[in-house]
Structure formats: structure tokens, C-alpha cells
Image (cartoon, rainbow, N blue to C red; front, side, top):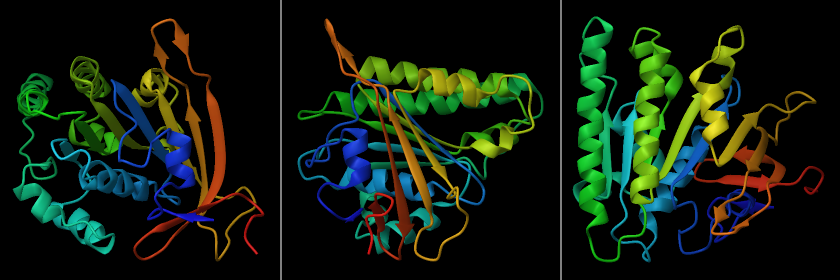
Length: 262
């Protein structure tokens, strides 16, 4: 059994992350899919802390777009995990965009102009960070795209365009793009959704799901991590699938294989 505060836990191993806070860079897209009854937000929190707390990556930046919660929500949770987001925000290592309280204009053209403006700010931030000495990777996080679509009055085309813009930054500046989405929002939709295209583009897909056997007091759900591997030069690493259970605690998360707890 390993907790999220361990130097190397089951989640980090499945993602291919190493102990210095690295891994997961190099133009990668990581998609987190959860359900209403099994939130995957704890994965976002873990990755925020990992990306901005490593002493070996002092010039890396997390650009965070929140359609779900105010800054105080993330700050409160990360403080319990030993990470002060307020300080990181002042130090420009955590760049927070409050997408909740934006005045979204009526009409698709107005919404598109607004998203282009936000994208322009993200691009400038990433460009500035990439010019710093010792730069390794920046991270762009979106919480979450299902609420983004709601804010844009159901325009999946605008959502997809924006996600593709962010993905272009990943490939251009060696960024990691992390997206959270509620999978069951689209369970009754027959037409292709942004989720389907993101699943295709994603290098890593994490699914947070309830237990197949139902509820349990000491197990909150299961994670399935599909790591599609990375192609570099003439070689490609093989795809790997890992499955394990998790339990969310006050200031950490425990990960363990089924049947490994006594």
C-alpha cells in the first residue's frame, strides 16, 4: 500500500513519473475521466503539488483554468497536503485563471473571441517560462471540460478548438496538458463529444470509477491508467494498463492493489 505522499506511489509509477517531480513532460496530453459518484479531482490535486513542489524544477509553472471552483477551494485542499498555493501564486509558479466568474458574451463569435483572449494569455505565460534558465516543462490544467462546455452554451466545437490550441502549446513548448472531465455527462449523447477526440489524442488516460462490487467503507474506488507509451526517434515504448484501488484521506490518498490490504 502506498500513499500519495510517498516518494513513488502506484499512480506515479503508472504515469511513468520519477522521484524528482519529473516525467510527464514532452508534449503530452493526460486525460482524467471520472464520474459524479467517483470524483477524480484528487488526481488533479496530486499533480498540482507534484509539478510545483519539486526543488529540482524551480522554474516550471502550472497554468490552471478552473470552470469548477474558486481559488480558495484548491488552496484549502493543497494546504492540507503541505503545499501553499497562495505563495506559489505570488511566486508566479501557479497561474490561476478564474473561468467561473467571466462574463461570457452571447453568441458563438463573442465566446470564441473570449477564448482566444484567454489562450493568448496562456501562450505568453508559457513562452516567458520557456525562456528561463533551467526550464523543463510547464503544465496546463483544465478543471473541467464538461463545465467548460456548459459555460459556452453547449458549443462542443469551441471546446475542441480551445483544447487543440492548448495541445499545440504542449508540442511547441514541451508542456504537459492535463484535463479533467466527467465521463457520465455524455452517457446519453449519441453524437461525438470532445471526450472522444481527447481520448484519441491523449498519451495517458486515467479513469476513476466506483468498485464493480459496490460500495466499501475502506475503498473509495478504482483507477485504471492507460499509458499509451511514447515514441522517440525510431523507438516506441509499449502501452501499459494498470488497475488499482484508492482511498481518499484527509491529507493524502492511499493506492493499493485489490486484495493487498489486510
